[in-house]
Length: 124
Image (tube, rainbow, N blue to C red; front, side, top):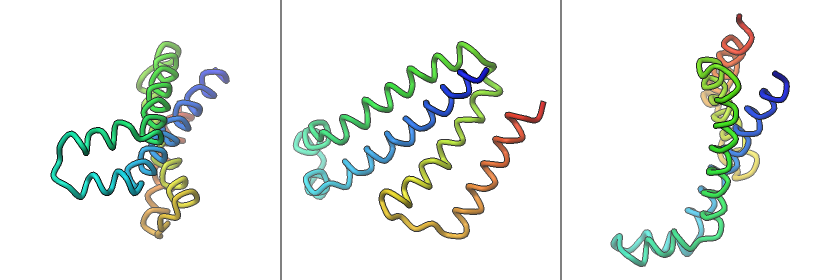
């Protein structure tokens, strides 16, 4: 079970990293410039050729593969609630990596999610 729990955390970390990469790519000057124009081929190419966005999609895909391994090992009713830890990781990453605000409301929400995952994971 220890390896499986490590795989859950690894999948969650990969998913959160993917979100940060995707946000960074979508916030880049080239993509933002493309988004300011009418949606079309130029916009699709700007998004589709962004190395940061491509790395984010690759990371997200790898996260999904790890997640499939997790699902092969434990009940989905235990595994899926642990994915909520991705919200915790993404909020904290958004704050520490992207400088996004960490308000009392967000902190409260993250604490509730964390407690809920603990109840599901350890409340047998």
